[in-house]
Image (spheres, rainbow, N blue to C red):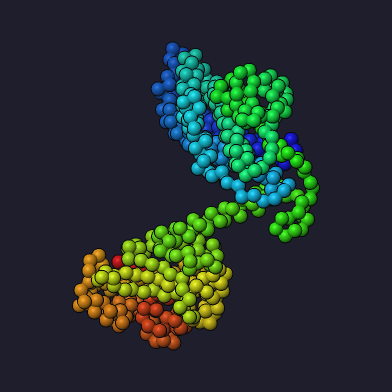
Length: 523
């Protein structure tokens, strides 16, 4: 193996050791819990007459703990082992592309998705899925063996120490079985992942030989050792003793696959491993990058593209934000907008059905955001407009907030979430007005729309909130006082007073009282 392959092998072995340790700790904790419950039962029952024998059915604390521990162990084993298989499967798949890109140039290879790995992991082997083998073949067997052992211990009249020792022995035996399944499955998943990578590489025109690599020690199967260094035939198969396979762990015969430690490597036709390479983007000679550095630089770049597409799709699906408006807005900003809107729609229930569109626009001048209402064939529809220039980057919007708070214009805001919440409070006002003078789910008549527009123009509902809040707090309704408490923007009208107070991140007494009143009255 060359240095790239040795590095990958080291990472895989490191992952194996880490998983072994976590599984061992998991079993240690499980057996500790069982021993504690066993001791409780021994102490509860106390000394028996020589003619009496303990019965398993008497060990109520142990039996209850055994059921709990079994259920927890099933879940933890599945999570831990599946995570290990996904992690090492991705490393095995990436190995060939890591070596090629480091030695030659970047290529646009298909990523192996986590869903594909999960499908590989849960593919039945001998008619049993991994989850079934862990549940029935490991945990249920452990539970059954513990019960059988303790029945014999109690029949012999043995002490707590002897019973506890048998628990520990059964736990260790089960741990070894879990490790065997994990290693066998890891080998299989890595083999399938390598085969997928090799197929992808050939489709991309990468020229290489697939070579069998055996672990040459006394534990390696004799026929597997004979394959060491052998190249696959023109169809990609290896053959031994009448059996054919494209990878180790894929014979489909337990005697050949279980606990196999062989693997394949992809030996590039021009196998050179320079310590330095030319950066194909900058033209500079750069130091050799290890796997983690390559993975970060290459895979994160690819994943970032997928992440951007995903966030664009979510924003369009949920809030009708067209990605033609957001091309020069950072992914971090869009993620923050999406997360904030999701949280606000959950917090301010009942707004989402009427929020028909969120738009990034250049038509707002110095205004950062604006809420709106219109009637479409008599039905109320809400919207939010966001200033395209202000929202380009998270740091841009935060700087804007800092400046306007320092100038005494705004109340402190919790970033993008605070600005959006200000607008959502306007939407709550609109909803409350429509509910008072018209209908939210039906068609509003011209008379109803007229009343709604009049109430909106007069700030009717916000005035009620403002007057009640100031009265309850015994604060005079004077612009100078309000400006000193909430900033200049809150003095423009009652609607801005309410929205600024509600979105005040400093949690002033006015903010707390306004939130209480809005949440009570604008349902």
